[in-house]
Length: 315
Figure 1 (cartoon, rainbow, N blue to C red):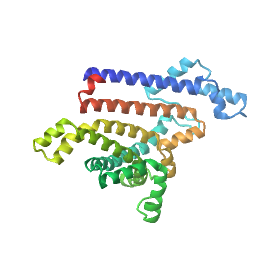
Figure 2: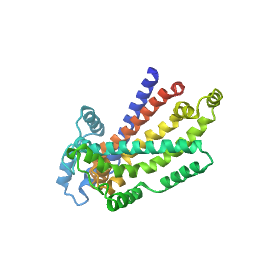
Figure 3: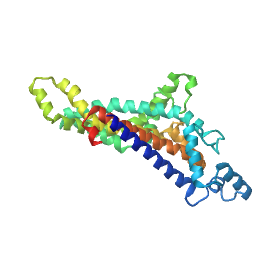
Figure 4: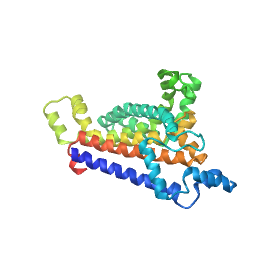
């Protein structure tokens, strides 16, 4: 197990280094002047020169790359040209919204999808199966921002149960802050639950046909115990993959939903940085999202090894 973990950590570090090089090359080395992109074509030469010096563009590319990575490793980041504050401070403020939002959405999608997928698998070819597959098709076909608009119309405007937009901040209390995230999380969770329900159904159906399941039935083990103690654990491997990818997607792909609900999250920060041409923020945020995906994949591999020891030598 230790050798497996060591190999996976090496792969993780190599991937992060390659990603950082790619991001640096695209934003600062390839043809084009980042300072000119930020200030616009009508900028004065002395203003351009001052910004190039502030961004370190007058130094060689390898020196700038090492300074950027060294700053990240030491906990210091660049200064945003739009907000005039350190990028880490901006990211920390936005992660305080996006991480709970993604966690709630992932929890809702799991709670909804796993029982539905198991119901469809155990009722294969019957009304329950057709109902779950119909829900899955609708959930995958309708984008999450449409669910967001419908949720606002029903639960906020018509019923008045939830706020339609905005985030009061954690200083207003955990209850008020979490309550403001319920509708956005629900809008994000429904499409993900539709995908996870199909994966759960397929994994459970495959496991139900295994020899050890037939042996357990022949020994008189109850159907419920077989389903929850034997089938579900062996069906967790493909489900774990989807859950890991969903969490990474929810962190990076909630831009539209955060815009609909006017949430000050990481997705909205990315959108604002791109539109305002704040390349310092774009560079650090993109690397953060890449790191999240890589770390999540690492966690999924470790979960594989914990769930099924046969995956260790293959990995």
